[in-house]
Image 1 (cartoon, helix red, strand yellow):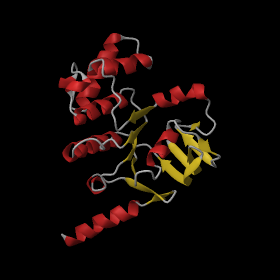
Image 2 (tube, one colour):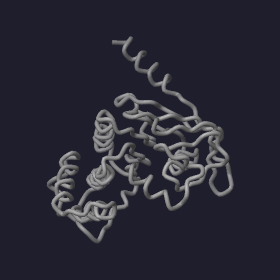
Image 3 (cartoon, helix red, strand yellow):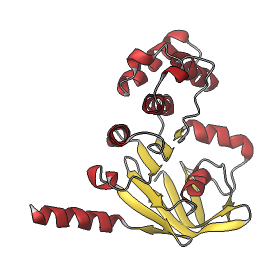
Image 4 (cartoon, helix red, strand yellow):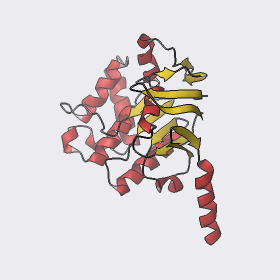
Length: 235
């Protein structure tokens, strides 16, 4: 199991935003976290990569680590096994796509230039951005920058991808392509946990669905599967 949360309280600014969270994520899972703005979606994700602390959980394990008691010096090693995708891309704007990706590889221990070049080419081909390798971020559209952010996230072959509103700043057709790409990545064994407000994509790209509401996290996957069954019965 990649994530095992049992009775986890998510706290931000001394306020409990989610109480008694139970969440399990296994290899290859495709998980949506939905809910209104301010319902705790992003805060929940931040606990997974130790940006936010946990409050006296019964169990809080991520990639085999007890993240409720992890030492700060051990957090970078945990994050190296993850791919983290932000809504605002967070690319380095003073360097090309190639150099953005090379920066990550060098920072995570890739010493040989040839191996770094080969890995960069591979991930850009995987996200259909190979022709953008020498472009600067400001030369790319929002959708293209998000594709590069996904390429960056999969550089180190992560066991899990954490994506915070990866479709938030892009048009609907590009959003569909982004979710399709993440779904394909999950089918290769990498778990994906993503927040989204594009609810209609849940039917097109099925996965597990959790809703943040009134300070609680609830598994509502059955609601969307029931919608699918209802639609099928109309055909």
